[in-house]
Image 1: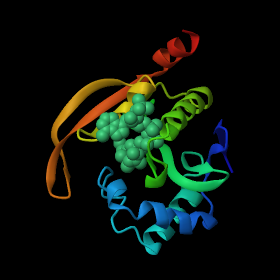
Image 2: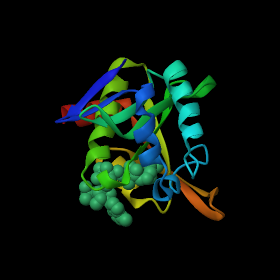
Image 3: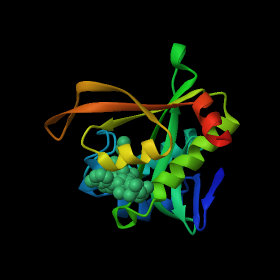
Image 4: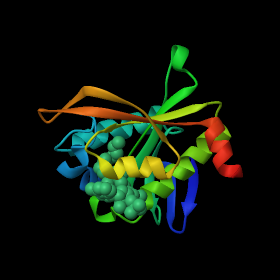
Length: 181
Ligand SMILES: CC(C)(COP(=O)(O)OP(=O)(O)OC[C@H]1O[C@@H](n2cnc3c(N)ncnc32)[C@H](O)[C@@H]1OP(=O)(O)O)[C@@H](O)C(=O)NCCC(=O)NCCS
């Protein structure tokens, strides 16, 4: 069980079987799903949760985490190392239960996840792909020093609507400069 302290009552930790009920409660929300890839479906059913927990617990316990308040799931966050010539890069992703939005929680969680990744892995580049209408997520990334690298025009079709995707990235060197500055 990996555990990363955030602050106060908040931690990032590996998934457990007993996260299922709260996972379905918070993930089964169209306002969450509309900003994520279709692999995070709506409706988000008991079966969806079972499949995700199988994968997360058996294969991804060092890279996908529950966002927890007092050890209870309120959202999810993780990183996905890339392969081949991209093997020093990883994509990050996150979501939070709607009742907890707007309290700076994910901004702080992304900051701690970035610190943990650059301290504990050899990755040199973290990036995120955000649908262009997701201003809150863009804000989270920019407050953590991620810089806009490009706009992938009409790259996304979500719920029948075509959207651009914005790519933001943070390099290890930039992270070091932020920490020492
Ligand atoms: C995006 C998401 C993770 C943000 O989590 P959060 O904990 O509410 O974010 P924070 O409170 O840390 O920061 C949000 C920032 O966006 C700003 N924001 C929120 N909605 C906004 C909007 N419509 N327009 C502009 N800024 C907005 C907030 O004011 C805040 O900035 P501030 O601290 O400078 O005021 C959360 O809304 C969520 O889970 N959304 C659905 C899933 C998702 O979008 N995941 C990311 C996919 S890339």
